[in-house]
Image: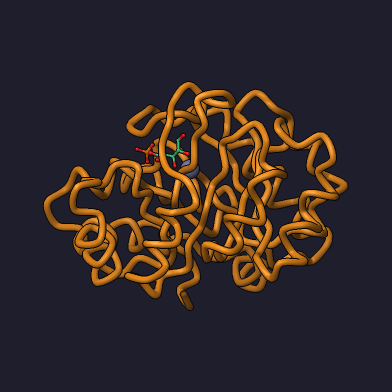
Length: 233
Ligand code: DX5
Ligand code: ZN
């Protein structure tokens, strides 16, 4: 960590037969977080990994584990994922009717709490919970698969989330997930994001270091809002 923009490779696009090597490679390549996509075949039409993989990953990397739960019954699995070593646990507002209770249950286990929402869900649903989270994740594709195309309407939602977080002086990460590439990283960060998840954009490339560096360079050409205001004054 420590970079103004956090880059979080999503292992969904990694070679699972060589998972430890892939994780070591993105760690060496300059990643800030490791994004782990948990899917249950109910909330999203795909199946991936559970707590045992998180536990194994924890043993082979120093990167904070950014665990994205795309599961119907998130509440029931929070203890296991916390125990397995998740550093961030992010839940979907659509899957958590008692969202405040869910966020408390994550935090009381010493895990950073994140909240996310699907592209068609309005950001206003997060208004009341924004002050209680460490990470807000904006989905820029319909969750379930890697390699999909970024939905441009989401730029507006990123900007709205930025305004909401700034209004309460929150330092929560504002992370964007789905279709993030070197080519759109600048625009996503200009809208207000501080963390970028990238699966296929990183793992489909031969040189992870060059790809992460290019994404970071593109993102960091954006002048932060506060210094921009200072320049204009
Ligand atoms: C989608 C997952 C994403 C996915 C992103 O459901 O939440 O994290 O891995 O993959 P790309 O970067 O390829 O769109
Ligand atoms: Zn994800």
